[in-house]
Image (cartoon, rainbow, N blue to C red; front, side, top):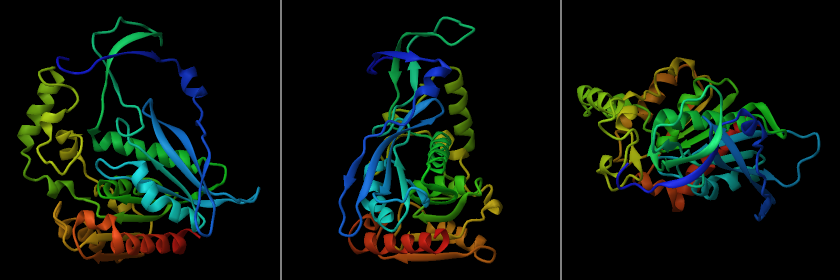
Length: 327
């Protein structure tokens, strides 16, 4: 595609390569005042793409001991580094095994590969050199949901983790993605939604359905690029390239009746990226009579939740929620 950087890459499509791609462990310790935490770099497979993850564990775990696990889901443009720094070590110090990861095409994770030219037909998987574009920084909630699901399976398969005692923490868009997974996996026994825009039907009501259908048609016919690029993001506050068609179709509330995990909802009083009344508050009002749930707010705006007293206090609330329902 004109104007895009192209790279010569070597790709193996054999199933054997996937089976042999075990987690790449790079252990090193994170010091804390009370508990020594080990962090390992791991590889998670999602839809045939390698995701980079960091696994946090207390250093001293008895041979026969298993601990509850917590999956951290970053937001739009977020990273495992950010949620790791702000939350992972603190949760691990409280006796949890914590996994943070980068979405595909973000951070240290691989992205999809788009062949620059039509490939030769083949009945079986083949190995060869392919000229392709390495797609980066795409915001597609369905692809990202698949990443969250893969990360949860990875965490649940960890030998030191109680496989049916998992918590999930999502911040910003990660809160909505976490809800999708929490409504479909009964291993999740505690869910924390921090500033999650869970109601995309309301949040993107200004996007005409007819325009989205036209965009899908043009993409299918090759009239526009198959992956979004810089031209699709007009909001300087948002990183990356949003797939607006996918976002328009995204509905985290669709299976809310299947949510069984006790739910903590944290929001900013001065939220401006979405209307809390139709998101966190609506979520709480829908589940409060049938599930253990709590709705709390903190002063300031969206990004004020990641610093100072708000960060400390909200993190403490989340930690106490996980201790209550996972320990």
